[in-house]
Amino acid sequence: QVQLVESGGGLVQAGDSLRLSCVVSGRTLSNYRMGWFRQAPGKEREFVAAISWIGGNRIYADSVKGRFTISRDTAKNMVYLEMNSLKPEDTAVYYCAGRSPTRSEYEYWGQGTQVTVSS
Image 1 (cartoon, rainbow, N blue to C red):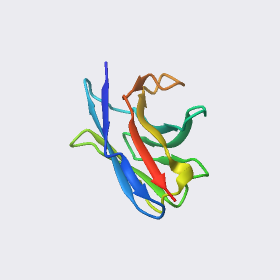
Image 2 (image 1 turned 90 degrees about the vertical axis):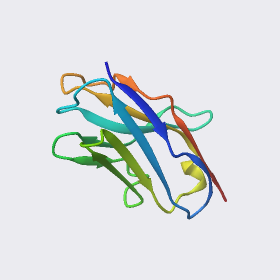
Image 3 (image 1 turned 60 degrees about the horizontal axis):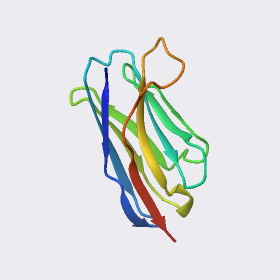
């Protein structure tokens, strides 16, 4: 079992930066895929970014490419999402998620952290 706890959300202005953190606990994450998703009011949850625990290969949604950076600290069991040049359309609840290499769907989810970007 894997537990995920996000933090770092808040209210910022357009153009500001914010860093989200996700503490990972419960088991060794060798070869896991860790991701960030978000869900805006009235919309479906959408993929933001993902990183492989081993190797650090990253992928991003087109909407955040060049503005957001996902990273992980394997020594601290942390996953981060650095968000720059924030836009009002980035407003959402952001979720940290993880999946084992044998799964195609993310199986572990955090409780979410609210990010609100004012114009």
